[in-house]
Length: 201
Image (cartoon, rainbow, N blue to C red; front, side):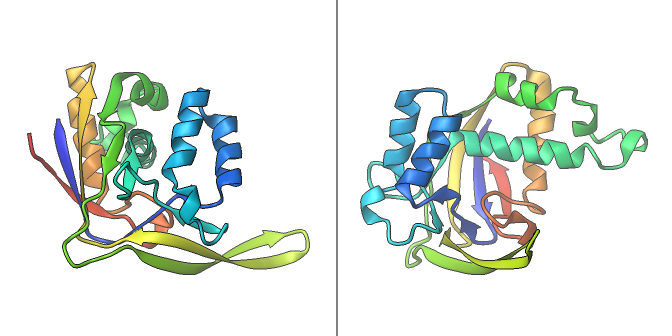
């Protein structure tokens, strides 16, 4: 499937702009040294202004992009949530019937290319979103300021979804349909990162 996502809300970046934090996280979670180096370089460490900001990785041209695994992460999130819909009384709910969904998505559903370029509408630019984060600690409520780079609503990405088992196609469509309710990127629960999708090939 060749898929186009049309973002109906702005999308917030998820990569730490602090190269040391990002490097440590990738070192702990990345599969190999090549991946770590590639991902650290893609956040554009020379242009970092604030260590607390989350940003988008950049491709070789300096344009914002998504990694392929971020789309797979969205699929896992969508499948997890949709599995809760309607229970046994909803025969249309395919996600609720998929066993070991994380293993299936990891091993049977693939996204390409690895770097997915964001196309921003002409005349629009990257933005910024600040919001408070509240948390309960042993010392009481704490409030911090979160800051994220944003791509504007109207931006588009295109990618391919390759399936090793054709029966998973209906599942992928179900997950993509869910994107209009809960999107991709930071602060999804507020409606950021929501999208509509279409098949383009």
